[in-house]
Image (cartoon, rainbow, N blue to C red):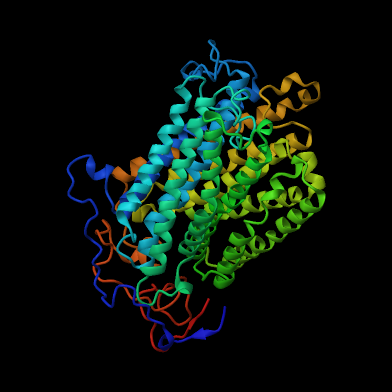
Length: 599
């Protein structure tokens, strides 16, 4: 590890106006009768649970649309069993079979919901809200009422998005990227009202993200406990803090772009319409200027959560803590200069595409640093094989597969051939599901004892892990072969192309995997619900972890800490030589004869 430090050199940061007594336990919406306690409650822990249950609903809804898409690709034109007749007529015919335009609707809404209403609220809304105040020793967020408003803006955007299924014309079928002019010119768009609602929902969802990000940034900068310097913050806090900065910079671009589509569709403007001197490619530039930082908005929190889980269950400090922080900072910066690699097939100048190709390959460097640091963290550690650890290790493996396929697509000559194929579908699902969702599942299991005060069912947890791991790879790995074999994206019936008929068995395999992946959510939901109601009570620190959230008992009091803790060292002091136990909490001084190692 690194050079040693002594406790005499601790820099005490007074962020509570000199008082070590917590005075943040007031004004959290407590004492409200009945259901209002759960509907409007400004305690950050309750808001985290609101995001958790809402995002779980959208996960099931968006996952069901994915299963419907896979059914259509494996068995084109066949009615969907059981639920076919329940779907809107803009998606299925009278027999319950998906129509071609309905398939486009499923593609659009599945991608939109899984990105904006599942991955973002789970990673940022749930863990940002729950962990940041607890991990930095604060009583709540800097702006509690704004925090609750952020949730209700998110909920409102979800309601508007779902309502688009039942307006005249139905939900949009322009793809989750909503490329202009297909999305912005009424003559091309079969569902202008649904498209307008889609844009309005994203605009409001962006407001939710921005208000949350302002809260996270302010809280981290101004409300850290005494001694909690920036480089003593746990990595999940660093990751979500950097993600909040990305949100502030990227989300307004998408919101403005979506507003311009509303204007074009409803008010006669021509921002994206060529006949009115507009530029269809303007939408692509605006969307992907947001869209590539969005990839890291979805993956940076996963980096932080996974780093902590690997350290705890390896009983070792995070290898290269500061290198991990600087790698995340580098990824955040570089994420804003690579958006053009999504547009190689748009007719981009080859010199410009070469610049985007180089910058994309450069961003692989800090990602590789993190990967090798994760390997260094678990190398020769005293590994505890738990459900959270299994998901964390799988996250690293799946993210590496997704990252390696991404290097191929960074090269313009390769991307020109594979961009519109299922090779791309395989790539971004390995990054976003194999990455973000595996990290989310691991984090839910890891912090579940602190969120609920109860332990989860270990058997159900392992069933969920193995089903998810096996069926995820069965679903998405064959898509690499489908793409290289020539199967294009966004086609509802591959059997109409003679050149693709030989690939149809792989489509069936992917669909079987998707059905199994859908079934894997059942033990997860059952485990969470059953354990919250009947699970064995959890000790305050079941994993023998070092960070501040494990120093408070359950139920966590309003204001979190009766007395603001003082932090004496970094967050990952495991297996310290000469210490009687193998962990040293951040709020405990080391014995005088022990010199800690800086990370």
